[in-house]
Image (tube, rainbow over all chains, first blue to last red; front, top):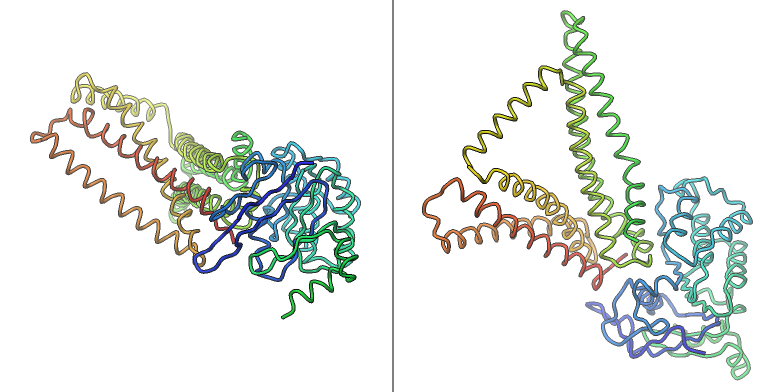
Length: 232
Length: 261
């Protein structure tokens, strides 16, 4: 099966620091991948490059063989770490915006998820709480039949009950052809859903492995391993 | 995709600007009625004047609102958190600039039309319209005499200049905002400084071009025909070049140097 994401010597430098240095990475289809690392390790930088919000300093990153651009944005569904939906819009208006631009957007699915969480689509975003807005943003992202989902800290700002719902949403809504890349530092919450993990530290990948392999060869949980590797 | 972007941009701007246009038209009607009543005596005579003042204020408010919303939409929708949404839509980033520019132009023209219509609602009478058209005809006749056969050329060149000039003002603001976001902090201050610098630099450049052009072409005798033959075409070319540079710089920054917080 061909790779969905490939990085070759990917490097991103800012004026004063190197955010990513010489990353080589291949992600296959149909995997749930945890991108794990402490704050400032380069997780968001990598995800921003995947989504065309940053341009690499050197090296390449391709999605299904294509450089990030309008074509790849049509097949990558991105949940930024920030709340990025226009506050003045109603939930229903944002849904039609997604429907307008993304061919793979499934409106019925979005309304179904809204219904399950008892969220009112006629409300304007600015009237909703922070947690509710995050749920809506996640619903929009997961209502696309994308080939690659990039979720940047999807469970950071919501309560544990919602966290379970969100993870459940992620697992049940992605198809077997698609890959989900989840960046987080809340490892214990998500480690049970992951197929593979990437440890990233100071802009370099220190580990990229199958979760089952880690458990069988190292005999410890990802959370424990993470705490050892990134011990301060 | 451009059509969809324009549709959404219109939706986002209509909620401010459409009510303002309607208020302007209503106030012009109120002004006409109040002024034509002629029942206000003594100190009450201030009422028609107040109506006129309110009406004029509403024109100013509309004009300022069109400008501010144009700036606000470009900054807020593309370069704050909303930028994460806009720049990950499956569209090329030049389409984002185009949609903003086209809608800004549409509102500028709509504003001009709204003001003309409201002026007619407020003040036009059959006599004044007749007078206006008479004045207009004699103005056109005079232009014809001064510029002999080049009147049409002059008018076309004039309107192309106005059109390109409007685009130029908008693109200058866009490129300044784009340059401002290159700064890690103080992006708005950066945009203002960029605006001032680019503005001064381009004016200096224009003066330089005019001086050089005047020297090369040796315009020792300034005739009226230099306006349609040289001045306006030169102005069109210069504005086109500036528009291209401003547009391309904005596009380049969006593609290569995007720096969303």
